[in-house]
Amino acid sequence: MEKLWNEFSVGLFFWQTLLFLALLFLLRKFAWKPILNAVNEREQKISDSINQAEKAQQELEALKAQNEDLLKEARAERDAMIKDAKATASKMVEDAKTQAKEEGAKLLASARESINAEKAAAITELKTQVASFSIEIAEKVVRGELSSADKQKALADKLVDDINMN
Amino acid sequence: MHRLLRFLLVLALLTPGAVMAEDHQGGHEEEHGAHGHGHEAGKELTPEEQRAVNKEFVIHHTKDSYDFGIFSDESTGAHYGFPLPVILWDDGLHVFLSSAFHHGEEVVESNGNHYMLNYHGDGKIYKCDAEGHILEETTVDEETGEVSVAQLAPLDFSITKNVFVSILMCVLLFFVFRGVAKSYKSGLAPSGSAKFFEPIIVFVRDEIARPNIGEKHYKKYMPYLLTVFFFIWFLNLAGMTPLGINVTGNIAFTAALAILTYLITTFTAKKDYWMHIVWMPGVPVPMKIILFPIELLGTIIKPFALMIRLYANMLAGHIVLGMLLVTVFYFGAVAAKGAFIGLTFFLNIIELLVALLQAYIFTMLSALYFGSASEEHDHDHAHAH
Image 1: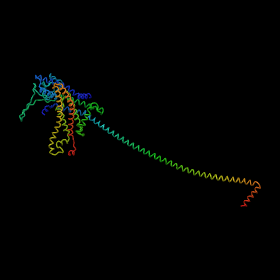
Image 2: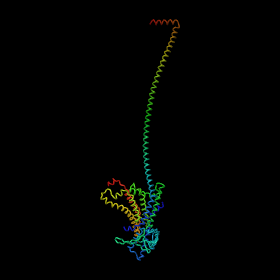
Image 3: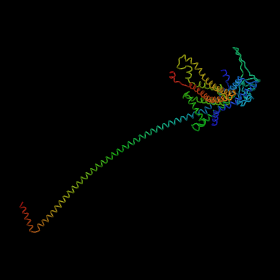
């Protein structure tokens, strides 16, 4: 212990304390503060970047899920639309069919009517024609019959016979 | 800045080799020294005397000195190096270059006072008369009548070798870390010397400060911890150079740092720290009374241990290396010389590790003490145990 004390130099102790304190204050101002700040800033930046990247990825995933949902919805909508269209189309066809049938039936009926009317008209005309023909023929026959006195007399006889017979 | 860093790295890597070169230098010096003493005495030295001379040689080189000696040739008495200023306070300021002492051979007269350097003794400066007799002060204790004799020594504020090396290291540290700080201006990614030093700075923060002090308070201790770590480490590395520098193995240096750690611990301490000393929670009252002086003593023993640990480790490392170097020249056989050179090389590598380890331990323990000082207990939790 005494040897230790003998080796202790007050001057050296004084200078070392002074030098160390000077170094401490100089380094604190010019080195440690800027260095530690830079290191901290960088670490902060790195952790921020990582967080940001993670967030971006999460967002991307959310977006993806959203897209999928949207796609699903669109598909469903499309399916529904197609189904709807199909139904409408078949209904239209059906409607058209029934309408056409009705129309046809109507047309048929009117045709039939007109045919019947024509037929009736034709029959009437034929009847008049036949009647006029008959009258013409009868006239001719009568004229033939009545062309001579003999014949007129024969006819009258015959007719009298007929009437007599009756 | 890059060149400085490169220089430092090269220095660190080449040190074992460089010290081996010093081996021969130191050894030759030693041999010459031994022969020189031998001739003076007019006979060859006995092994015991040789060992004593070797021991003195090694111890002398672990001590602070007033000049920056690079090597000396004791057979001719020539010293190579440069002198440093001596600053004394003795009823007035006395400033002169250490070369005036001629390595303890001459008495220096300054403003009417005479001073001499006890070069082969404790290496300190004493007040003396013109003939070189150290002035003594005799005091008689009035109660016991005991007579005590004290050699008169002036207050010594000289720029010694240790102070000079410390100044150099402060300048180096300042420029290196200012360079590191500046490199962040061009971008947040480390560049240049920051690539090497940033991981170490982050290590001090994440492995020393944060776990020991806690997330809440560690920031205010960071400048001290970083400065102490790099200052000790750089000075330890400077001690590995063949210039015979031993700053961290000097008790005044370690005392300065340990006292700073003690002061910071004491003045930043929170209520809980004092409560644990004065009235330890969670133990019976008699124990509280017994623990009070123990805990109070502990606050002083902790920094004292810090001081002794660094001092003893570094000084021991230097002495062991020095002794091994001297041993190379103690043995005549080439095989023995080679073996000791190899052993020295191996120990140099270990010392390189110790240089870093001791800086780490000092910083680590300082952080631990700061942690206990700034700790704030959850009181329910404290009562639970």
